[in-house]
Amino acid sequence: MNIAHWLARQAIARASAPALFFGTHKVENYAGFDQRARGVASALRARGIAEGDRVAVFMYNHPDWLIGLFGIFYAGAVAVPINAKLHGREAAHILKDSGALLCLTDAAHRQSLHEVDCAVACVTIAELNGTADVAVAHRDGDDLAWLFYTSGTTGTPKGVMITHAMLQAMTLSYGVDVDTVSSEDTTIYAAPFSHGAGLYSFVHVLAGARHVCPASGGFDAAEIFKLATHFGNCHMFAAPTMVKRMTDVARDSGADGSGLRTIVYAGGPMYTADIIAAVEVFGPRFVQIYGQGECPMAITALSRHDVADRSHADWRARLGSVGRAQSVVEVRIGDAQGTPRAVGETGEIMVRGAPVMRGYWNNTEATARTLQDGWLMTGDIGVLDAAGYLTLQDRSKDVIITGGSNVYPREVEEVLLQHPEIAEASVVGAPHPEWGEEVVAFIVGEASKEALDQLCLQHIARFKRPKRYVRLPFLPKNNYGKILKTDLRARIAEEE
Image 1: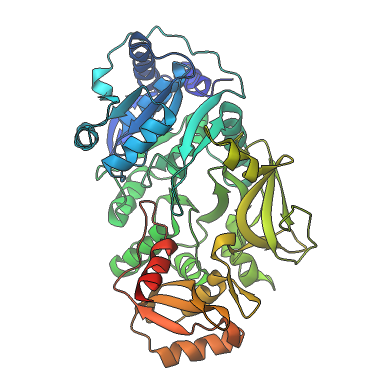
Image 2: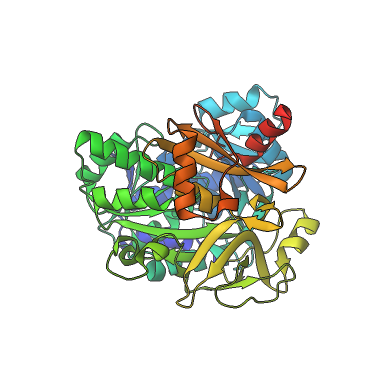
């Protein structure tokens, strides 16, 4: 089934219900949303776009983004969302790799692509003025719907093939494992549409909810608070860095998050100290999910109750986890060959189920490495407890082996961030002639080496304590807010 049928049905059932907003301004109701998406589909077909062809979307968050996305689906084509923060050269690589025949842009991003001599034609939604009499194209569940390009922190981004059935499984599991959504609710898109925020648009279309794009075009905590107060019953997807920023702004301004019902966080490590602070400020509004592009948004979930609970004997350990397997997947821990490990043993996180990708676009070698006997080898290291809670240790490539013992950087980072004078911390391994690797901590903050050493010795084994601390004004991050450990390792290599 083409996932666009969900919008078509809402256009009949709730034609006059408000659908798309730019700030507090209503742009379209559901009938208008549907008609404009069909107009885009008609125009795409007039330009020769056929079922299965790729059409990219490279623009700032705006209602036009959703209109373009569903127009692509109505036409039976494949969406290739590109993060609006990428450089034109990076976007051009994705366009070339995906074989996109057309790119839906705004004026700023069209100029960005023009400056790097991109050969793919670029059009704005306003320029796609087709008729609205297009039927929804038939798509099977295994047909490609969305090409998701990985963030590429360790190399060239790969295109994850996401099907209509994968999107349906992900969406339906949201209502079971994450939160309920009704037609009285509102979702605020403060994170890039090209990733988690856009993927969560489907559950809100299915429910006939309101879709709000902040007028700033991105994330501004004060703006989010105002929109939440205006609309009420608001949901949003946020990266951990956004949650931390919202907490800081709320403390400074006295905001309490009125109107925000649910904040789903994912996309990077949420340190325990940060989520404890967020719950203290906002109360029980948070749900954590763990997913990958290869299994979008649908590996595990840590419920609102678990995030806010302080009464259970294991509440802190559970809060440091990413929750339990979502209803549409199996999760297990395996060794390097995929053999299951016992409860409490550390190994690679493996996932099997309906939301798991069918492979990487035009990359059979990477597909064969990542999909083994029906299991997705996530590349993440973790441990499952007896109650089914999954705790992430680190990416397998980030594990530090010093003197034959494994050190998981996140464990060390969690300790360092307990110090009130440390704002950010990232731990990597550096070559050492005797021990193989030594632990190096890059920090943002004023805490002394002596204070940090003492803190580490109080909480973790001596061999895990950083041997060096490198102070930086800020940590390097990619366009998705993830810390670039490759850059930190390169800095060490240059110094040596």
